Length: 211
Image: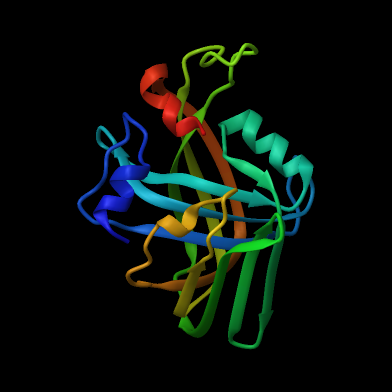
């Protein structure tokens, strides 16, 4: 995407990285050890906190209320209830997320070669916060949460992909330009996540981003 788009999206203390990269996924979680099966999706932009590089989550639609509640309360993930679709037929894979009758996120790929398998690790940033009952800021200073995902990928393919963002007043990710799709990957495996707090965040500086 563009450096300007990432700079506009990142709440302090997150900062952009030299490469203006973003990522999106749609997937089926066939089972979990906390909320059962569900479908989900997400959009991230690359960011860093001091020497830690990761992906800041902009939106994370989920198909079940249990998945929404668990992720928001545990990590501060920006989850919202949505209609999520994930399908595969032959070498073609596609998925989407829809809220308020607007399919605002669509992914499509054609898998043509084998992808990397084995152990992989992801790094993600979230902001955990609660608004005050009287509407004047937050109950407590917001927290910057770092989540490490450790995956054992058993099957993977890669190929060419397409990302489409559609305009929605409820989920305005269409403001993020898609200048080039670098890679498209389909994978199957198990993922375990663990989070910890990096720091408290300046409430006044974060407030505009909370909405």
